Image (cartoon, rainbow, N blue to C red; front, side, top):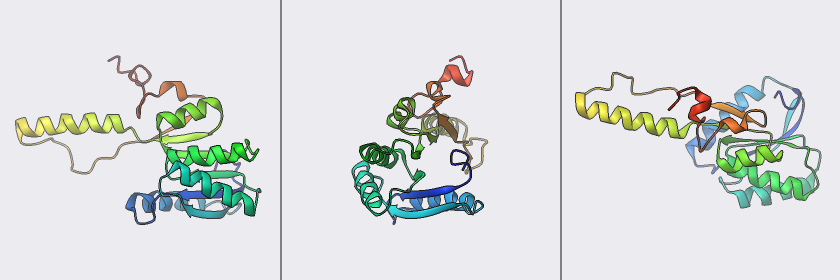
Length: 177
């Protein structure tokens, strides 16, 4: 929304239609984007979480219209594919945003090919799961609720160097470990 100045035509690339995760992400995007009537969804297609399919679907969309200001992808793999298609079509200024915080997307952000990704701190989640499993096995309780929220982080060119493999680098997080 901010990158497009609250207006423009955008494409949404979704994951596998039968995948709950794809539906949840798309619903989340829609819940926010519906608040901005000058942002117009001109295409919503499934690229099945695939870079190759995203490239092909983006090419097809561009054959119908090159009047696209942004692409919102349900994962970074599709964002990378869409970005490659846009670059091949000579449209480097179209804003592409992904989701997951993958190393490939962060590298593309550093090169200026993708504008942003939303990092799910998978490494942090995995560490926490192991720590809680250990605690549960030793004490019979984690002391934590079954459902726990984990904040996602926006990765942009300005802060991309602060991120490692699916996590905020420990130095950047201030843990000192």
